[in-house]
Length: 186
Length: 87
Image (cartoon, rainbow over all chains, first blue to last red; front, top):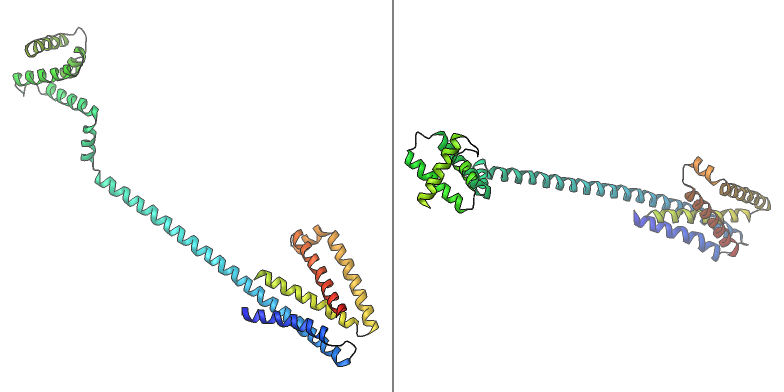
C-alpha cells in the first residue's frame, strides 16, 4: 500500500515535469502527449493522495487502539496492586489477632500499671478467699515495689488498697497498715 | 503520512495549474476563458482571505487552517503556472 503510494507520487511528478521539459509545444503530437501526461499525472497525484489519506487514518486508528490497550493494561495493573494490598492487609490483621494485641498492650510501659490495678481490684474483690497473710504479704511486696519506684504514700495506698486519700475510716486503716508494713519490711 | 497526503494534493494542484496553462495554450478563446477563470479565482481568494472568520465558520475549519489552505493553493497555482511557462 505504502509502496504503491510512493510509486504513484513519483509517477505523478515524472508525468508532470518530463513531457513539459522534454517535448516541444509547437509540434502537434508533442502537445497532445503533454496534455495526456498532465491528465495522467493529476490522476496519479490524486490517487496517491487518497492512498496516503487512508494510510494516515489507519495509522491514527492504530494509535488509538494502542492507547486504549495501554490504558487497559495500566488499569489492570492498578487493580491488581490494590487487590494485593488489601489481601496483605487482611493477612496482617489475621496474624495480629486479639491475643497478640493484648500481649502487645501489656508490653507497653503503662501496661504494668494497668496490670497492678487489675491485681488490686481482684484482691479487693476476693479478700476472704485469699488468706489474710498472703494478701498482706502481697500488698506489702507491691507497696515496697511501688515505693522503690518513687511513688508517694497516697498513690501507693490508692494503688494497693484502692482507697483514695481522705478522712475515711478505710483510708485510715489502709494508711496504718501501710505504715506497719513499711516499718516491718523496710 | 498526513504530510505525505497533503504533499500529494499539493502536487495535484500544481499539475492541475499546469494543465490549465496547457489548455490555455491550445486556442485564444481557451486562453481568455482561463484568464477569466484565473481572475475570478484570484478575487475569490482575496475575499476568502478578507472574510476568513466567516468563511472558516461556514467551512467548519479553523482560521489558521483556512489561511494555510489559501496560501497552499496560491503557491500551487504559482508553481504550476511557473513550470508550464518556463518549460
